[in-house]
Length: 188
Ligand SMILES: Cc1cc2nc3c(=O)[nH]c(=O)nc-3n(C[C@H](O)[C@H](O)[C@H](O)COP(=O)(O)O)c2cc1C
Image (cartoon, rainbow, N blue to C red; front, side, top):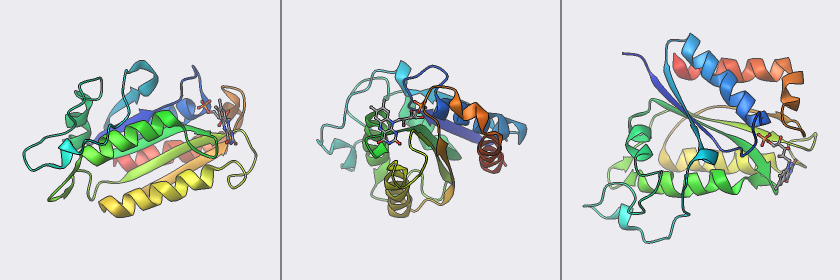
């Protein structure tokens, strides 16, 4: 059976730079034979985690908040690999990405470990600065490493680069190739 790769894209911009990286990764994963679903958070209505921790009780499955993430959670549980794609906002993940992480990563953490334990996870990030340190991208990369360590999931790779206007990233073929190759690895 082919592998299921889910890519969660959080840019609110049409033709956003991180969206372009997400599409490249999707193309690579499909070329490797995987089934790929791109989830565009900008098209979903989702609320922030309310801290109720109902998802951590032995009887609860997933999150009690009923919104567009409700039907998504079981699909993420079944994914063989997960990629998060999004912009740097204010020196770390954009709020859209963080909201997804808070809700989904917490809900999928149960008494027997995390649903994504052992599944490769990757991160695609774009930022306006020319440097991953001064842009704040490194803060997101470090948080992502901590998340993966905490849930016991291997980091499949990071692809990150600079672009200001939507579509700028198209001028960096080497970066597009990196995203494609990360997708290929996740899809194999
Ligand atoms: C609200 C906001 C905050 C931003 N904060 C940063 C930042 O802290 N560091 C940075 O390098 N770029 C920052 N940027 C620029 C974006 O990260 C950059 O344009 C990125 O390529 C957008 O990705 P997208 O096209 O996929 O949405 C910010 C942009 C916005 C709209």
